[in-house]
Image (cartoon, rainbow, N blue to C red; front, side, top):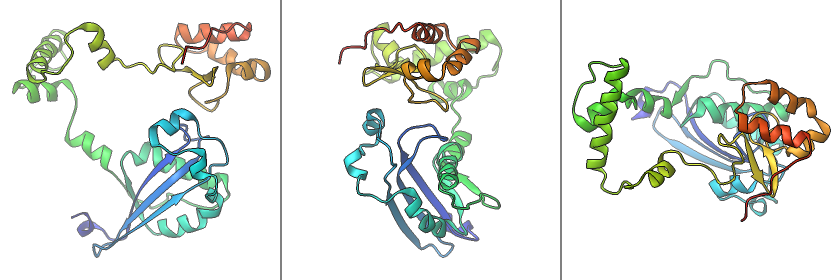
Length: 261
């Protein structure tokens, strides 16, 4: 059991938020389970008012609406209690290194509550999963075909191994689609809200909005009027052509019709 290796409490936590931008999005739900070296556990949950509307696409993921948080305390109000729970803990979670911990640190900094990761050890369940259960071609050939990939990373050997894996997948999974359109939809899913192929620009409430970086959620119309330099940076940078076309047209006040609901 995990508690048997602990020298101090382990805080396992998970966050639901207004979006995926660790710099600008806000926590709306925070759960912490502390596991102690003696095996005891205590669970704590905080519903938080993010002080901003929750985007519809985020609500579709976690089911939390503006009404659910309207009477909840702000993060500034709960931050002192959260700090107390997290000290002197090591950290754990699923993808905690790349998402939950950075977002939590941003929230503490935003409300002026001192908090440091210094000296905290990290146990990330997702990282262990990826290390112990590799999902590369060699692993797929072993799993589906019972073969070792002796020619790994030679181009032709890799292609032949992929063909073997595909044949084995269609034999194993009878419910796989039997036509390329349906297989493309399965393997290359595209969010209907995306306005470009990579999802850098998406439709939100009838407007084209940026879907990445510090300007995530900002309408192109607003940026074209107030921050054209940001759009010019996109045009100068290594973005796909269809993304640049949308940005270039926005700077000329040309916008496509939004998709039908």
